[in-house]
Amino acid sequence: MVEQAKNGGLALPEHSREYRLKRFINWFPMGLTYAFLYMARYNLTVAKTALGDMMSKSDFGIIFSVGTFTYAFAFLINGPLTDRIGGKKAILIGSAGSAVANTLMGIIIYGMLMLNWTLNLTVVFSLLYAINMYFQSYGAVAIVKVNSAWFHIRERGVFGGIFGILISLGIYFAFDWGGAIIRATVADPGKLGFAESLLRRMVGISTTAVDQTWWVFFIPAILLAVFFIIELFLLKDRPELAGFPDFDTADGSSGENEKPFNLKEILLKILTNPIIITIALIEFCSGVMRNGIMHWYLIFTSDMGYSPEFFISRNWGLLLMLAGSFGGIFAGFISDKIFGSRRGPVAALLYGVMLLLTIGMLPLVSGTNAHVKQEMKVLVYQSKIEKLEKKFPGIELTSTKIGDKLKTNYSVSRIDTSITEKDAIITYTINPRTKQEADTLATKLNDFIFVKHKHLNKFQNKWQEHEIVIKNIGRVVGAPIDINAYALGFIVVFMSLCVIGVHGMLSGTSTMDFGGRRAAATAVGLIDGFVYLGTGMQSISLGFLTELNWSYWPPFLIPFAIIGLVLAIKIWHAFPNARRKGK
Image (cartoon, rainbow, N blue to C red):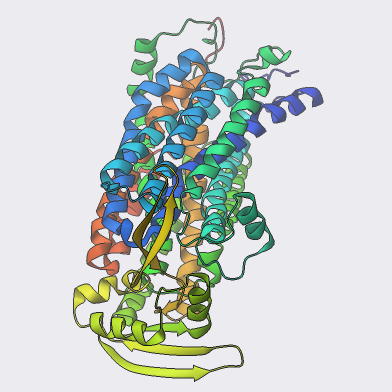
């Protein structure tokens, strides 16, 4: 199957067609499981935008940071545990646990919206999301552990590209599929695409007075359950278990693969390796940069009042998938083909680009933020009011009532009415009175009409009345969709390309290189733990900073881009010393 190299085992191995096919069948379903774990992780961001004031930016920051810190420290247990029990058991534990946690989060949202449960959402979700992220932490260690036995060191740059694609696919599932789930399950969906209409029928929604946001948690849970069953039968930890001989992968544990598992020895090997520690620090910065862009850009566009049809925010998941896939393939190709399978030069190159792009964000973010503070517009559509009145008789929702509510709560400077062939549109121009009002105006305006609604409580077999929020009577218009909006969108997409390329190279590839097959899961646990320490730190920090002023966003990121660049340059020449048997 493998032709041994003449110079220490570092030549590109030659695999049979049957081996390559089996390797694909082995890692591809596991890769999709990993992608759906991402969907079940980042659906929190999608839910935050849908829940509005039920989950503020600071609430989201707290919940997400609790989860990410849990994820980071879980690696202290799950990395060594995966090296002992194998990647197959780890991915099964992770997918099952995450499916249960997502189901519970969906039940909580259902109870609060439909059954009038009175709960502290921040506290309850912090607990459940922490449980979810504990089981999520099995994903990365499992996929690296399994593939460390199937890929030679000279093939792992390519695998780093694959790893980046899997991350990008999971982000696409989370943001675009998650966004489609939200659009398909809202009370008044408007015009839906084919897939969204099909999904709405599949979950049994005809008419509803409440946005059924809980489905953004239930559907990933269902997908993970399906892939749990698939992996139970298909996945093999090593080539030998699939009918092929194991081979020397020429990594940091070359010649040691038959030695029994020894946690103390493995931890000592990893924690005394200066290259692995440096990579962990770089990946701490990657955690700040990746999630400091990926999550907060959508929240920024929502706060700034961008049109829901703005191409970049509406297709955010797709753009991240394409950018991340290209970034992963590019990073893997130049690492193996140009830099002799060294990962440091690729990381340094991509961090240099990220630093320049982060600086480029400064005027675009502050300029957009300043514009929104000066003026916002609310467009109210008469046709939507009439549609809601027909669907829910007696809600007393009129344009006059809406106007009075706006004038009571905001500084309405001008009211304009325009008539088209299809609709009458009332435009309220609002000039914020205070800094706090200016900073929160865009999100608050989406949630300003409360109406009474009766529904049957099936558990208690009685009718109940509660207040609901009507969100879809019109739209908030804030920042213009101009060249600045597209320029900022291009920058954040390209930054995602760079940081996913770095993450694929370091967490997905260098962990196998320097940790070796025996310690692959423990090494990726350490490094991915640092990624999520960075993620948790930026989450809670930006949660509070963006409540104060969005202009603090890029300056917060710049120091981490600089530190990541400097550290990546330090490991420019790093390469594992493979040890051969008998030497």
